Amino acid sequence: SKATVSVLNCPSTRTIMSRVAIVAAKRTPMGSFMGSLSSVKAPALTSTAIQAALQQSKLTGENIDEALMGNVVSAGIGQAPTRQAVLGAGLPTSIPCTTVNKVCGSGMKCLMMGSDSIKAGANDVVLVGGMENMSKIPYLLPDARSGHRMGDRKAVDAMVHDGLWDPYDNMHMGNCGEICAEEYGFTREEQDEFSRQSYAYAVAAQQSGEINWEIAPVEIKGRGGKVTTVDTDEGPSKINPDKIGALKPAFKKDGTVTAANASSINDGASALIIASEAKVNELGLEPIAWVSGYAQHAQVPKYFTTAPAPAVKKMLDRAGLKADDIDLWEINEAFALVTMACMRDLDIPREKVNVFGGACAIGHPIGSSGSRIIVTLLNALRAKEKQRGVATLCIGGGEATAVLVEMA
Image 1 (cartoon, rainbow, N blue to C red):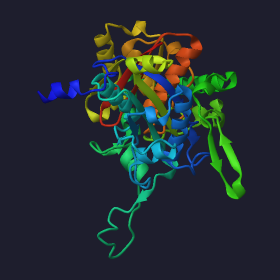
Image 2: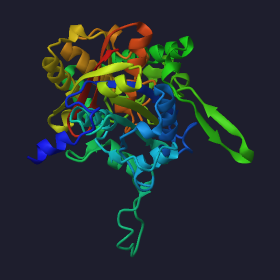
Image 3: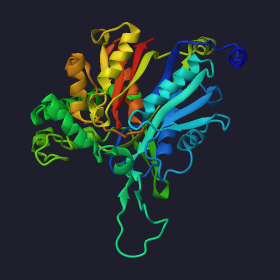
Image 4: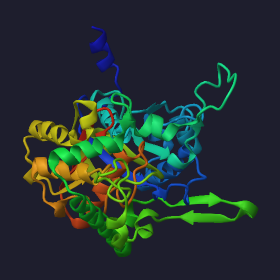
């Protein structure tokens, strides 16, 4: 059969259903909205993360079979963002590149797709990750092409319209968060306290230097050839925890979700390199961890906030594990209540979750976050000398993805 011929024609180093290793994991710092990274296009940020990942893995561009990178709002970036990032990093033109949009899960979905391709024997080494410069997302003039005959016209914020808006119920993601808060009974005080803990964890990770392992500094060339190096997440230093409780609700007059207990708007990129066990052995690579499982879940769009727990449960059931078997968790803080809901549904203790701070403190560049939390999870497992971790995040449209890793 054609399928049999395809398998037989795979290079001898490729093994069907091979174990998948993560051999590199890097990310840029998270720049604040209109902050230190706002002038750098998303593909250029990604090129920096790719170069750092290659250096960490000790591979060269010639070893990469395919590149898969997430990006949510591509308007204004230019054609084929992943291709731009790969060539911008100096990799060969022979590498096929694909840009993936699964909203906030884009970067994680890339790792899942890359792992599938390795298990199928189609690839040996895949570059995966994600990117978003939310500061550079443009405004749109929807009727401009057909002509503006008379009167004022509205400019549409592509960041909100294509990235942060529920088109099914026609409301902001934050309003979906308010629905979750009401149904779970999460108070404003509980969400604020969770957010304060997130900031405290992030600041502690910066002060200890533990966060530095995962960060690839970004060099920005300015006028007169001056180079500015950005090597630190901006968010944690900009928040005064004492003022969190004084902020007004962001989405509903009597609501509980605020700018502080929700994720911030950010610029950043992340990159991982995954490889088959056969290629790891052939090249003498040093795996950071093994990809031990992944799963997806989908439900009613406005309840995207509670989708991570079912995705995790499906994944752990397949692996024969329970939540208690997991040492550390990265549950993306799209809103504090998203992480809180997953913790309640799966009975996860707070001290195991987002131990280097989450998106409330670090930020949420939407196309990168799915892969960023995997990078941070690996760093936390390494630093805390733990073995098994789960990364999961909610996705606009009612979905979620989850990945299980075990340190090598």
